[in-house]
Image (cartoon, rainbow, N blue to C red; front, side):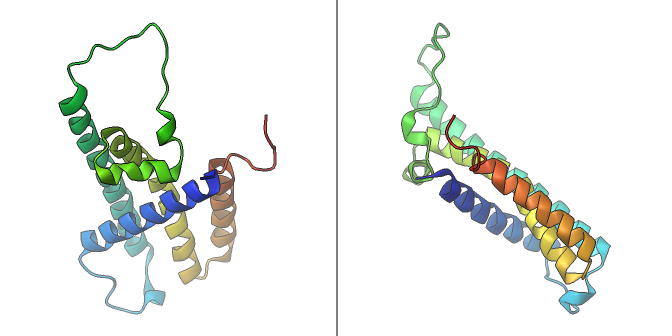
Length: 161
């Protein structure tokens, strides 16, 4: 599984979780037309999106930590050599092991959701600026989203080190 697929899956999950959280936080979509969204409405949605994204990511990581401690909390940590995450957690298809109850996979999923939360905020801002027909901010937000996507996919133009 490559980095682009990982980025896309994390981004889609964060946008979905953030939108669900922001809409339930407000309790309604908007009574008027979408074109009448004010800055106050957009700020409220963005703040709920960020809040719910962080809460969801923190909850997922916390649950993974509790499961990890329940299964291997009595083992002694060896600090003589550094051991990174296991090889089975380095791709998106491997992180789906979180849904089978793997504690490390659940914690990794929580971290990915946390990383994707600000990206979801930028994506929603792009949508909101487009609704408001603010062309300058649409362009600036597209550039920011492009830089974020480029950096999360490993800067594909550089090639292997």
